[in-house]
Amino acid sequence: MPSPDDLPALLVQVRAAVEQAGRLALPFFRDGARTSARVWNKAGGSPVTEADVTVDAFLKIRLSEIAPQAAWLSEETRDDPVRLRHDMVWIVDPIDGTRAFLNGDPDWSIAVALLRHGEPVLGMVAAPVPGITYEAVAGQGARRDGEAIRVSPRADLAGARVAGPKPMADHMERRLGGAALVRLPRIPSLALRLARVAEGAVDVGLISSDARDWDLAGADLILREAGGTMVGLDGRVPAYNQREPIHGELVALPEALRDPVLAALR
View 1 (cartoon, one colour):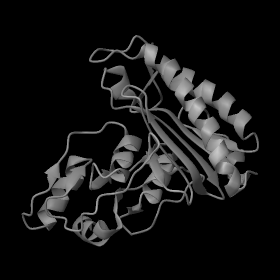
View 2 (cartoon, helix red, strand yellow):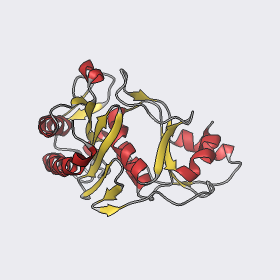
View 3 (cartoon, one colour):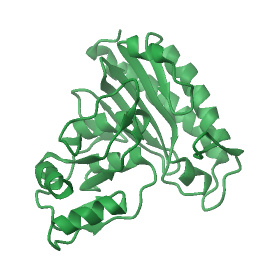
């Protein structure tokens, strides 16, 4: 099992793997137009593309070479409950924001986390179209393209920049008694939404119920290392690598906004 001292070297290898995964996906992406990849619907109706499957297969091979002792959980791979017995688990979303990808919207990402004892210790969110990568190792801060990032210093909820589901934002504004929020354009990739909270471009990221571990875990560590937090409406942080890797409503924000946002959402 990699020690904390091994994680920076591991991050370098993960970064190279994710960069190559992005190069595999980009030929299928058409800016402003429908993807050239084959598209079909999974059970439940959500779309999956040829690019999702290609990236998933590549990362499963490559990350398993980097840390072969880690189990695997991915959006596009059949879940194997053996992961529940492993101390280490790779959590991967090969393309977070598949609908954006297939419709030519550049706001999609590749998200990777490595868990140790259920906690993310390495996280990466890469946006291949603009060529931006967010990353973190536990205890060593968060970075965007090598530069340190921090959450917004905002402590006042009035005027806060909010991204996420309209019903949650509407509820917040009603509870605030008319104090306006700044509604930002939709960010289709949930991992990118959290990363933008981590870099201070978004003050409050709202997350509807049914997000999965692969949407959250990598970006969660980046957010924590940037001085932020992600919690449920009960104030608890998400638990990862559970039998059902599904989460309820969540908020991502600077610690200074935690109490007022939770009060406005309850």
